[in-house]
Amino acid sequence: MPKLLQINTCITQSTGRIVQQIGEKAMSEGWESYIAFPARVPIVASKSMLIKIGSKADQYFHALMTRVFDCCGFLSKHATKRLIQKIKNINPNVIQLHNLHGYYLNIPILFDYLKQSGIPVVWTLHDCWAFTGHCVHYTCVKCNRWKTGCYACPRKNSYPNSFVFDRSRQNYAMKKKTYADIPNMTIVPVSFWLGDVTRQSMLGTYPICVIQNGIDVHTFRPRTEAVRRIRAQYGLDNKYVILGVATGWSEEVGLSTFFRLRNKLSSDFAIVMVGCTSDIIKQLPNGIIGIARTNNVDELASIYSAADILFNGSYQETFGLVTAEALSCGTPAIVYNATACAEIVTKETGYVAEAKDEMQVLKFILYDSELSCEERNRRSLICRKYAIEHFDKEKKYNEYIDLYKQILDTYQ
Image 1 (tube, rainbow, N blue to C red):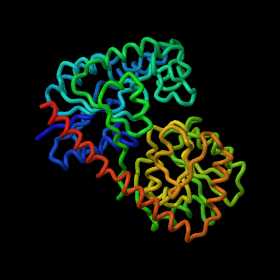
Image 2 (cartoon, rainbow, N blue to C red):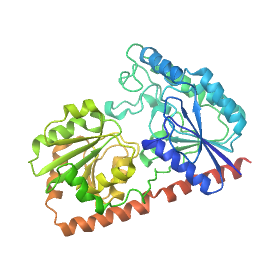
Image 3 (tube, helix red, strand yellow):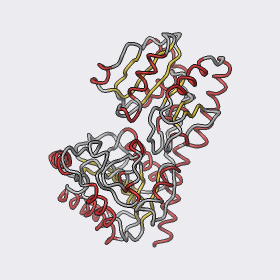
């Protein structure tokens, strides 16, 4: 029985949910599935065998040192060596990497082992950290130094935050050296935009195979039976509901844009923002309803279904998972024409605005609110059909299984 071992910074929400679903798909195809993740992350129910990496103390120390010395990915030596010993004991046929940032790994030590072992590696890129000297996203500052060599990072204070030293030049050089000559590595960007970017990066010499993220279209489905409950619970009856969903709200995902939209819309419109911390909820103006982050995907699907439209206010998406989830629930979306955002939406399933053009977003909202019930119902069916055809996790993760088999046939 072949063995798959995945490494990621989390096992719930967003990329964590993707990792779990890939593991489940692999098991359904006769593989053993292992998932390694940081010790600070709480264990949740999983069909895969779970492996904790390091300790909470080590990861907090790694994070603290990064705040000063800009060294994310270059500490946690003992934790990484212990992980490697566990990998040796498992002896996987394929190692799948996901997000390696998060203060829990030493990437030079890990990649030295990957280089020596010859185990086929699939590296799924969910952001740009792998090939920059510091940041996970660079587009908001229009920086292209990652193409030739980072220095004087304009995003030094962004995650993984460093408030003192800027080691982007050294980090970039170390990453480039670390990734050299891995014998059996395939890079899997999660969008066509990220695929194009990766080909221009230090990872561009490796085989690149784009596999867009998949979603559980059976869970994320129109919840017509829950719409009345959700609308009554949050006081949304007779309102046109604009939904925003984020794992963490900030300017980069459109926090203040929602505030400004609220000021321009009448009381006939309601804005709901999911994924808010208690501090964010305290900041929300009247007319915006804040809902805390939830791991309950059934409740999230019900909220998607109760909305009239999703507005994804991010202008630096490497895929746009919440957009795909909304479409699968029959809810159209407004996105910006930036990075991978526009890949998810067609003219039949929503609207694409120019990046940061809030007046165009407002225009789309007002136009959409005037559509008849018949037109909305028809489009809801189109959104659902499009999501099933393009983002069904069974289809997308079959592409991973096919890739594993292709790699094993090539290298064994």
